[in-house]
Image 1 (cartoon, helix red, strand yellow):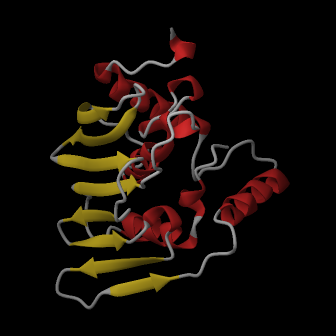
Image 2: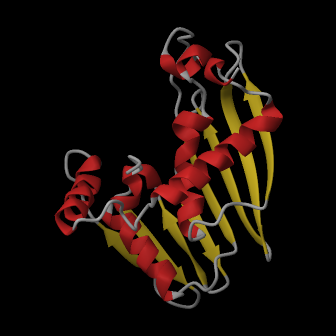
Length: 209
């Protein structure tokens, strides 16, 4: 099981329930970002190519995986991107536009040198879902057109991994080899999407030489 612990948070589970119910209609646009200022430390992991550094593989996986979740595991048919490759040769920030067909898109951003709001918003023809600080989501708000907002709140346990650990234990007790929340197949397809993003950047790591 990939340690994408965000998917198992109660607020994100509620978001999936809202999406499955169709309350905002078929999703048309997803916006998500994750960025923080890690400071300048070229020898540290985040900015060191020898250590697999850069934004996409550290912070960027979260908005990319979030878009995959919202679109039911579907990966984009087209990818457009902009990237800032820093002095150490890794991506310090990026912007992505995913196209899925039928007018469905995802606008995703990430950085290890910029502090961002780290929010996510999902838009459909009947309304939207807002998730502040979606990685560590403690709340989500459902806005259905013409209705009062519905707010879901849940205080997290000391570690966000707590909820994924519960899911892992439940899978083991039931004899399941993977979780339906995030299958091995989807994890691999997301990794392939990350490779597609990096290819036009010319960003390769020593292990890929």
